[in-house]
Image (cartoon, one colour):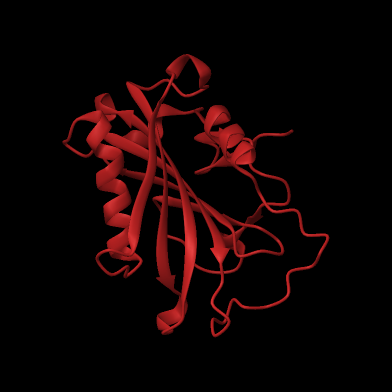
Length: 182
C-alpha cells in the first residue's frame, strides 16, 4: 500500500483503505491530519501535540483523559481497557518510546442527548528532543444509539477499518522532514 504524505510531506504513513482527507471538506487545525472512512463514522486523527511532562507510561493515559474531556464525556463514561508498550524496533518512527491504549467513550455527537459507544485505539510516539508527542487515534463507533444522527444503514459492502489497519498506520508512520518541529 502507498504511503500518504502528511503535514505537507513532513510525515508519511500508510492509511487504511479508502481514507478520505477531511481537510478537503472542512477546516482542520494545523496540528492535525484527519481522515474518515468513506461509509462508516470511523476516523483517524494524527495530532502533533506538546510533550506531556509525565512518565511515558502515564502520558498515554493523560492524552486519553484529555480526549475524553474534549469529547464532552461525563465522568465514568470513559474506560481504559488495555495499555501496551509498542516495541520501537517494530516502528518506522524514531522515538523514545511508543504506547498503545484501547478504550471506550460514550460520546454524544453534535451535542445530541443520544450517546454512541466509541472504541478508541490510540498510539503515542514520544519525541522529547523536539518536545512533541505524536498521537494517532482511531475512533471506531461500536454501538450507535437509535436516536443518534449517526444511526443510519451502513452499506453491507462497507468494510470497516480494523485494529490491523490501525497497527499498519502506527508501524508505518515516520518523520520525513524534521523541520516540522521548528
